[in-house]
Image (tube, rainbow, N blue to C red; front, side, top):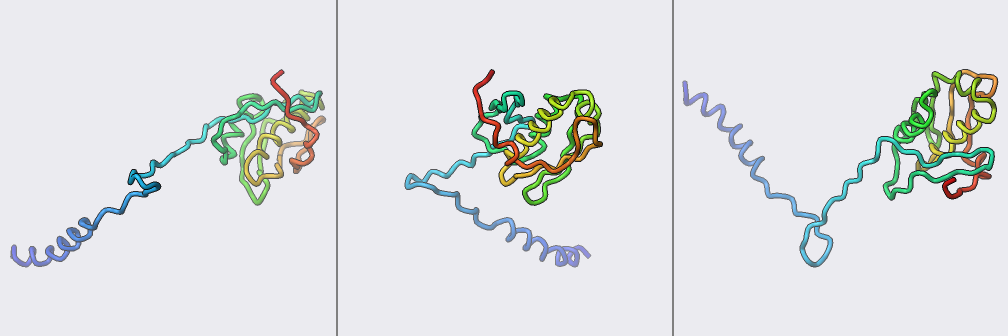
Amino acid sequence: MKFKLIFRLLPFAFIAFFACSAPDKPANITDSTGIAEAETIFEQPDTVLFWTINSEKKAKIRVYKDTVAITEPISIVNGINAIYPSIHLDFIRISGDTVYAHIDSSFSFANDMGSFGAEEYITGVVLNLTMLPGINYVNLDFPEGSHAAPGVFAKSSYAAYKETEEE
């Protein structure tokens, strides 16, 4: 009885032994010294804001100057929401060269902030989100108000905004 069990388990033991005893993969060698290349992992910050906006002066002031490329829209959305806590921007998706976002609590900026405030908010959203590689448009969905309407906003529409030094 014991021998039958051993003979049944023996093939599995051989498979496990040979599967686990394979040679190690060679290290990545980048130079003639034989030192293995160190992998560099860059984590993206969870909250990023590239620009603050001054619509009156048609100016954008650079805030984020790190060398880490930002590729996650949620990091930028978190940055925008940190500046405007009463207006909650939600990232929906990216399709092609367009970021889709939704604002549930748009009453504040679409009605209470006036045309100037709503323009400054939308400009900030568009200029920040179009800093993502390959993004040229932002589709903002929100209930229309007296000072702002939803739509697709192009990066090129804000070309007049010049980068300036901090105010």
